[in-house]
Length: 105
Image 1 (tube, helix red, strand yellow):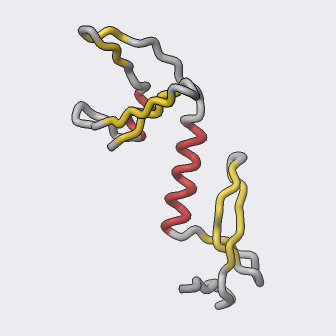
Image 2 (cartoon, one colour):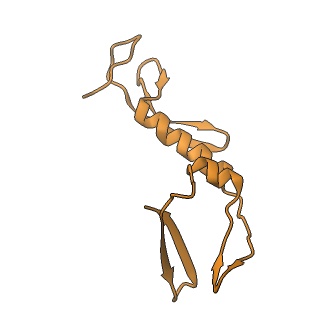
Image 3 (cartoon, one colour):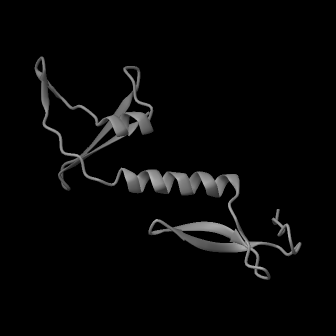
């Protein structure tokens, strides 16, 4: 379903808006150049802004827990991903690349 411009009643087209050095997707009227964010585009924009804020690389030392190693997470990461003691993590090692990807189940 095409969104129509509130002012011109012309179908909106995909466009972009720059904010804090980020290129964000918007709907733009080709006639009057008004720009809007839909709910979906707003969620994408907010996720990009959070991602940019958390782009800083965190370095952590492993902690010893019994015969295993553990890791603590920065407060910002805990808050954004709503982590708690019941959070389940999926650990995917890639030996060739020398990386470990951690995702939330």
